[in-house]
Length: 424
Ligand SMILES: [Zn+2]
Ligand SMILES: [Zn+2]
Image 1 (cartoon, rainbow, N blue to C red):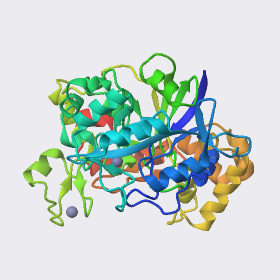
Image 2 (spheres, rainbow, N blue to C red):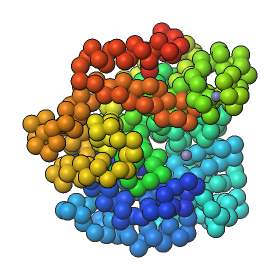
Image 3 (tube, helix red, strand yellow):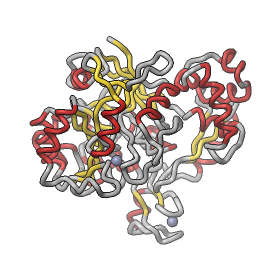
């Protein structure tokens, strides 16, 4: 068995609103810097991207990897994509090999969107979630709902359960993607998900290291390939060690809020306001916390108790963001941020830098940044929560007193119920 850090959801330049600079070589480089072992090809149904993928990957002992070895490291890829079914529901799919993809393409021929259209990397299928699941089951394709709680394209924005969405074969689904605004604690209040694994991926639209791998999972698997991933999902061999990702307070859809001015609302206030913001009159979007709470209650867990024991969920902030906060720089892509970032990455991966290298070593590179990293590890972080499509804002402190003062100030302006406070 081996341990792999995996980010299995992001996009190519051929999905809507994604960076034009994304390439497989760049992704592999960034994965090396980050400390990731397995990526996905993303958007594999797109014909131009598929050719690019084929040019850059080689098949070696039943695994796909980037053709070059980067500083002694092999970067593996699972062939996969995100697709959208009717009613704006997003799903992640993974395929065994290129032949497997062709089999799928043949089956979806009559309801697949025109692949020359802008944005078709995240492919739209004119069919239901249930039909797609049944097709995946027939062809033994791995399928899982993406960012399940998010208000526009998450499965739970449109359905009250996996069973309602996927129909009688719903248990073919073995995992859900939590999305940036949810963590294990929030999703583990929903009874139906008891035997479903929770994974965290970046859903990045950019190849840069503060996006790729901003959420990932650490897996123990036999090999870096589809079959081993399937074995893990079916509880045959391998396991999820832990999730790493954003604090849900940092996610864009953490709490219910206005989609324009980001004013927070309780669910009750939003309903009373008929989902129109009283400040700017734009629409209010339901937060992930409130949606999960609603679903837990619908399924008989209104006390929001934890349903089962789960692997740890470790909070992480991208190194570039920590540097940005430490040097008080507005732009995360500023050359000063990148300069400092590169100094750390010359010696360690980003995951090592953020999670395990001792202060004494980090301080040799940059003492100020090292202090902020240690504060982050000690959880001296407070967030002004996100919502309505706006990321939360983090603040990092050096003492518990400073942290608690800020926390109090922020929480006084939020209307969280006691039960919600346990989760958020
Ligand atoms: Zn999506
Ligand atoms: Zn507003």
